[in-house]
Length: 312
Image (cartoon, rainbow, N blue to C red; front, side, top):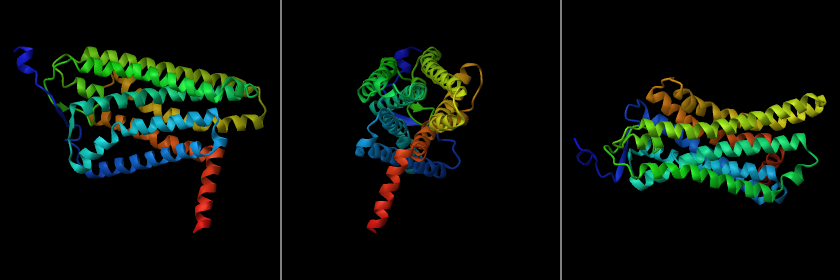
């Protein structure tokens, strides 16, 4: 049968990733609550930093950027999953699907980039504390942030440039939202080549940022060995927040992307669980970690709550 006879004109996609789910309402409510908490917490961190000039410092600009990335990342897929599970809206237009695919890829790429830059920030702050403010100025951090967003967009452009020219033989997505693997699976071509290309790009992003973070930690640990016990305790407290965010982001990502490339077979439910966890986990954990473990943000929150209490 010829390609022209098998291909179809797709204007909408049907999301079929939750078709076999036994408790869609319970899962939908859990995703909804997690999504709302993540967005509100990240917006609160952004407002705390923007509204207080004392927090207009490189580290807090990076935390603010991480909060923006988290909102983009979780909003790329969560509303669609909530709509499917709670409202039964299981269709999405072709253009909206492409936008969602790009936003998801942008979010996951930027999450890695930002965590790598934050590792550099901690490295300089601990190894070169007296030169920190001359090495990392607000202007340099903003320029670096702009460069990272531009690089991430360059990676993202590969996705629609690959998908749009291809003919589609199905309009049903295998997964729970419009990620690249789900969309390329609806085309009439053998997807293995495109899966390998995307896996290679994803591997380099995750591998190099993760190695960069590990090297930063190794440099810090070597420096800490020569420090006093009080300095070790202080340095450890500054690293715990970042370390928690790194673990939450990279663990599901490595299982889903890297391990499967080495022949580890995941069921559809396991793969979707890892994807949902990879999206919602960091976006929920990151703002609470930095809000509760960062002294200045915690004090800012305490002053706001105290003011609200006294006004009542």
